[in-house]
Image (cartoon, rainbow over all chains, first blue to last red):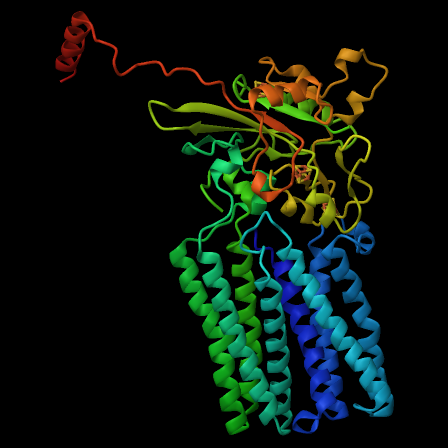
Length: 312
Length: 230
Ligand code: SF4
Ligand code: SF4
Ligand code: SF4
């Protein structure tokens, strides 16, 4: 698949933003590390809103005909993309109301505040599920047609959220022991989940050029693709990555997405140096961005069989 | 009623006439135009509803060239319609034709991801998704003679490799052809249940080229040729 930056940003940033919201809810519900004070809470909510908005705006930028974008909410009965839009929009009023509530009352975990906060958190989590399902329902792309996709989106969105909150606490010098522990656990879980996913998609399977053409008992080779230059189909679906290159990019991805953030958070909490907290956040966002890029490039749409690929 | 095409892989000669006729008709049809990008330049490309690929099936000497025209299969389980968030993509209940409402499409490409057969192409200029309409603006046109109420590709095919009709009616010519010739659907494992069917090549005894005895004169001629070349 074509790794369009706009769609990469959609799940990367909005997933991270919803992760921040969900983690804020958990931290303030349970008063983890003493809970976030009003200022920290507002920073976290604003960060969540900014992340989600980056995701939403870049996904709108991806549309070829954005003037009809408002129609995207209409088919929520069948389309996960429509459902994602509905929940993403529903998240805003609750997040903004909670922000205003904290601003005006300074109450981060009174009943009214907590109701708003938890609703925003839960709606965010539902949106992440819808985002995963956008990809997971496609039978045309074996690498996406698995429950591991929404599971990966969850654990990585939450890992970004926990890293951001832990970093925030380190930067302002507030106690962050439990939060860093949560972030480390989520980062490690993400690394494992991604490993499971890579193992899963590395096994051959899915339609072949034989079933695509119906010559099930013969070898089939492409002679001519039938077009002079590229087409929409080759542009959108033709991207591939050699196995060697994919492996080295995965190593880079693991280092930036998981190894550096884990190390930086540990050093950050031990030394109290805010520079390490910043490194953790930038590194995890960049690393998971690379992970999303791989997610697209490695997805092999079955239409490639009609352009000569033997198996997808 | 389930309208669609049946394509005979035995007789298709891969001339691309169907694709050209399709482009000509539809570039002024209901989802017009079929935009071209850089048509006379170094990188010619553009929107087509029908594309013909060419495959080699089997190994020498039992190999065969198969020309493979593909357009929208007007699937029964049209996931392209299910996933469309705007309702621009729809499947007509009365005849099963899958269409894109150009006034509603927002150009998100999602439906093209859901289509296994590469039938949908985004028009960069209009920003909307385009695809085969089964020439809906021909087949129901009462102004033209009845025998011309067929898709442009079917009318134009010089090899009569394309048939149009109702696959729901067991006695229609298309249903009979599918039954008698062992017509099949592409990638049945994905369960899209496409309406279009493909008729496999008829089985002929292979021409025995290996065993042909070479005449003595030809042998001498070949030997001379080899010597002269040196
Ligand atoms: S061939 Fe593709 S575009 Fe046509 S109905 Fe089937 S899934 Fe939809
Ligand atoms: S590109 Fe148009 S027709 Fe296709 S899913 Fe998006 S809105 Fe629907
Ligand atoms: S016009 Fe007929 S013979 Fe020519 S490519 Fe199309 S189906 Fe094949």
